[in-house]
Amino acid sequence: MRHSQYILAFFFTLILTTQARHHHHTKHKHSSHSNNNDNNTNNQSYPPSPSPSPSSGISMPPVAAPGGYDNEAPSPSPSDDDGSEIFNVRTFGAIGDGIADDTKSFKMAWDSACQSDSAINIVLVPRGFSFMVQSTIFTGPCQGGLVLKVDGTLMPPDGPESWPNNTSRRQWLVFYRINNMSLQGSGVIDGRGQNWWDLPCKPHKGPNGTTLPGPCDSPVALRFFMSSNLSVQGLRIKNSPQFHFRFDGCKSVRVDSIFITSPALSPNTDGIHIENTNDVRIYNSVISNGDDCVSIGTGCYDVDIKNITCGPSHGIRYFYDHLFMYYSQKFHSLFLLH
Image (cartoon, rainbow, N blue to C red):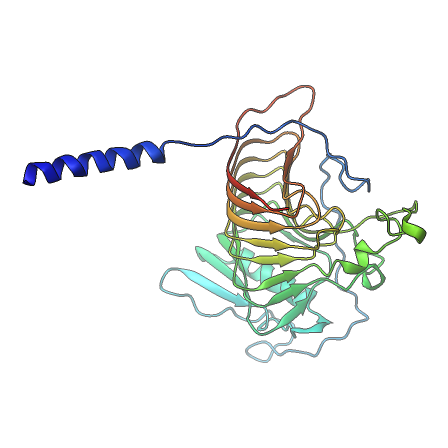
């Protein structure tokens, strides 16, 4: 009897192993991106435009640093046993009422974390607050690993009328030359895209459903440029004016368990766009938007996309140029909703 049990267990294990090795592959046709709108979907990568300091016209209440010196950056929270250090943006003067301009406080927290000698430096966006931040470039390289932990709500100015004239309209938050960074948290990044989508230069938004000519720049919500060893995990991001994420010239990108959403008719709101980027893993996420769930530009290779729920959107699209063909893209377990 005991021998019979061993034989049954052996065959059961063999069946499971065989099923686990069976993969279903779907071939995707190479095609070019054909959005109606645009100089915004151009495949060339440009360095991020410099972002000026926050407008001095917006007064912020003074926040005294420890020791009573107003001009000195506040000290971070004490280090944890694991060698990490926390830099709470509220400690650096951020208000978090959704109205005040918190850009300066975010930059101070970022710069302090970036210069810290700790192994892991956490810039904390705390739960229960809504922070309005202007178009900004967060630059590296940093001394140690950096975590931007968004547990509250992060948002840009509300639409083109509120966007400062002296800042770039092509990007909102840019992470430039960063190595070993994680963007994570239980909060929400709200791109407040509705007023951008309604511009008359957008497809069918002019009089009687027409599309009017004219400049039509709209900001990408989150852009990573010339960076490496990046992780994005657990976040919810919604209503970007244009692409939600864009990775340009990056290496070793991990995106896992994120939720991207924008209306089905929102123009050019690709969920994730990658360009000249390699070693990319996009797993276990839901993308519901108005354009491509994932768009893969030229110069990309070693891209693995697995267990993605996509729709109502245009699916996964990738470009190719006349010099290179890329065969290392792998797509598994894609659920397309219509």
